[in-house]
Image 1 (cartoon, rainbow, N blue to C red):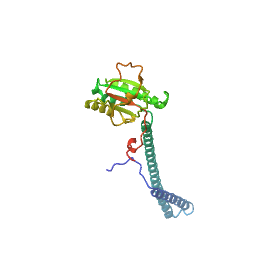
Image 2 (tube, rainbow, N blue to C red):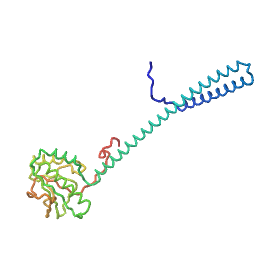
Image 3 (tube, one colour):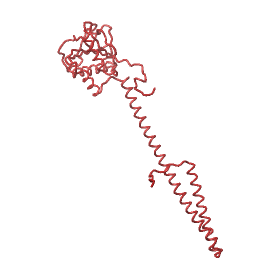
Image 4 (cartoon, one colour):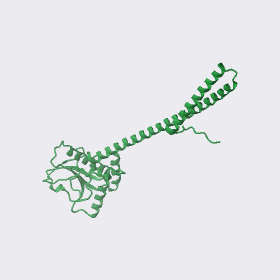
Length: 274
């Protein structure tokens, strides 16, 4: 025995119209049958054939009308179910579009907004640098003349402190300074440098440090030879709550300057379609 489906039947508009017409026909037959019976009963009681024919017509009309009514109701229920499904699908697409817009807005903020690291990103960097425990490294934030309360300088200081904290959490021998009076020297982005007397192993370590930080911080992708420190005359504490235990004499250093926004590409937005 075939299973009976509980799902409403989906009909086309033409089918719905057909059942409506049949319903009208059935109702018309019912009307004709009733009129015939009444006429046979009141006007010609001896004409039994007319009465029987009218009764049969009435039964057929009622059956046709009932069948058409059921089919029409099923058709409308099916159409309503179809429209509800389409509405739910449209709502789902709208929700997905809203989520995509939110993700895109957040991605744009990562690229063009202030530099920041999430707790998850910081933990991941600490994990990547765990093997460099004890390695000496200096962190410099270069003051290139922006007012102390300018968004650019605040962003550089905030980023420098975050980097210093991550290096310290990695158990590296990290110290940090703000550089002033650097005689025209400038620094943009986040640069990892190796002093001129650095060894090949120092460069390997510096490369590992460079690779650990995400590009959203405005990373300069290549190691730098030397740094701008030699041109600077004034050094102040990057983190006043963390007293220095040594001087600024590490072979490997990170210099942080103003963030330069890149040219936007679909790849940077991590879009699946251009």
